[in-house]
Image 1 (cartoon, helix red, strand yellow):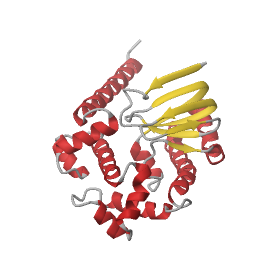
Image 2 (cartoon, rainbow, N blue to C red):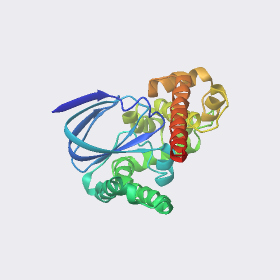
Image 3 (cartoon, rainbow, N blue to C red):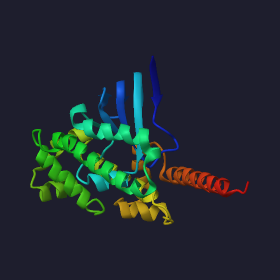
Length: 267
């Protein structure tokens, strides 16, 4: 039996899905490439970005994570969207994921933080292999890793440009362009990282600053540039993303409050 769908969930913008293929095969078409996830492999997908999925007799276990959790666990892993962790490297994380999902109800509340911390540590270990493959174990990988690290460090600098990145990374412009070609080009990569930074700012609870202010903080020269880059990456405008994100959060708060009221309702 085959199943196909577009995207993940309209109610999950702002999250990253960790998907473990317990059995079966899933094919995912991203805007820039196609990937396949097989038995025992783990993939990470940004719920707010476009993708097309198809599967044959797939049994998936899905964990919803915040980008901040992944960043804290593996700060050098880069953009997690479309990352595939092969079965050999994913085995320990996969085993713990299955165990946690099957026995979560039996974990004492006091031990919950420890379980989350352990999960994060195993995720960091599992992500080391894909990061090494994309950064240091391929021709030019270390140079690309150095340039990407510079982009992250200077992302909010308005003067960030290919010329500056090349000079501060110790690379020629032609080498820099060649390294970033698989990522859509230098300028595209910078704008995508800024759009992702804006997405994280928009997702912060209690954040009330205007989109123009947040776009400036993310490194964009104007809110119009931010809106265009954001829409290209996530398929919606920053304003629509913010409305949808906080509408979902408000619904979750309402469900939690209703559950609490039900729990203490006198009988």
